[in-house]
Image 1 (cartoon, one colour):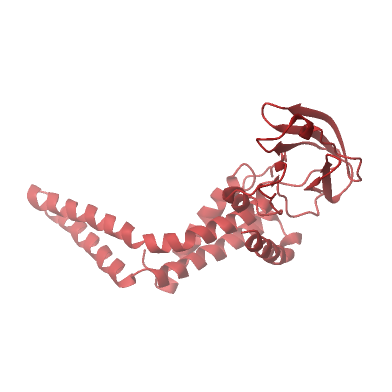
Image 2 (cartoon, rainbow, N blue to C red):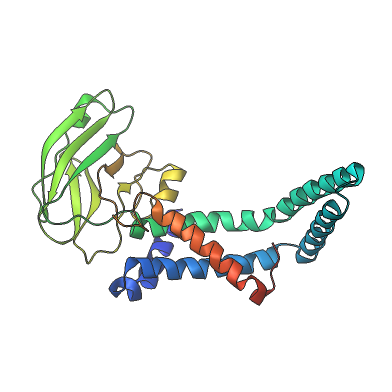
Length: 273
């Protein structure tokens, strides 16, 4: 999983390079359109298009029967039953493409989230960093510190032994991608901190060894299962504040634009769904 995340992150960094000088809404719309057309191609070659055509013709024929024989209850009810059954069959025919696209969609969405969900800190902004410790951590393990480092200032440490975490408040002081080092004197644990408008990728969590954490937050190397620190999270990373990004709005925009372009290119590629 980590190798796949490295490859995808590097690939998306290259893909997004030309978009760095363009508005975010334009790159989001363009990428959504491309993915919508790509999904259409997947549907075409992973579904039985002939069977889908027969099912849709059956739906049209039975809908016509309902309209023409609305005074004949028996014919109308039979036609309605056939329409419902055909609709269920159509959903079944679309299941293989959905299964093929599910994992790639999640991987792509995770990469896009690092560009459209959150934004880098501005100089002077503050964020809370929380290190979650292993369940079997001893009290002495909570004596973690963030040594003085360039680019940010860390203060106001808070420890909660019952909930197994240590938190600091960070204040950004210089632009760039900074490496936050957390140390207990024997081991060092790191987290990436992005500051400044020129940074295009933000990952709020360095995950642990769990599958879902690594899937959703692919931007940094996960901690090993044997590590004292289970994960490191920037609790209050600011989100993009716009009508298309931040607070998950970018995902809605992505889905809508993908569907719209799929319908636009549907007759061009001769795809039925």
